[in-house]
Length: 186
Image 1 (cartoon, helix red, strand yellow):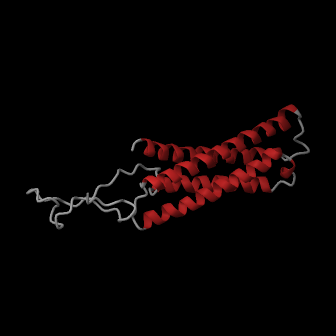
Image 2 (cartoon, rainbow, N blue to C red; image 1 turned 90 degrees about the horizontal axis):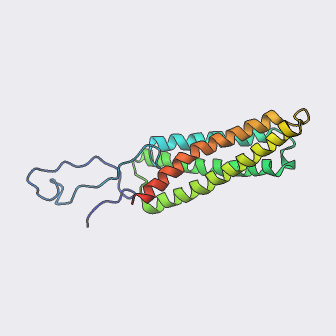
Image 3 (cartoon, helix red, strand yellow; image 1 turned 90 degrees about the vertical axis):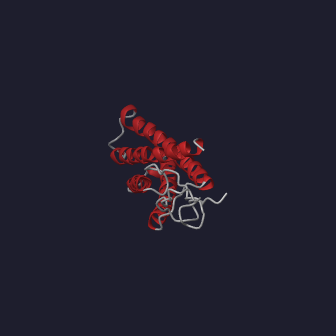
């Protein structure tokens, strides 16, 4: 079968075929190249790049806001939030670079192995980020509402970092779901 693979050849428009049915439309008898429809938000699309940039920015914001406090290492949940958001930011930045490359050279990233890697990575990173944000939210509620001890702590910073982590997870979820849907539809 002489069909191009999207990860090997640049993405092009479908070649025109002649009405005579000569087998390939004037390009030496080769069949037209096949291309899977790219849904915005999937790897290698502008929507996917926008999601990755948002994931990166909100994860970095969560780390930076939490790092401005001096007492976050004393609480395990806050340390976990910093670790998970750092992982999310590294993962999102690396995939944003891959998306930029794919857009610049006009390549599709719909290879089964690549989508599998992205799906597993997105699933792990988003699960860790969500768990860390939930744990941090629980601690901030404990400090603020139950103990009423916000005067001595950095409650505003803790709540802001937790909110940024939730937003980072919220932007990571569509990436994971679209990649998972792409795998399931094969």
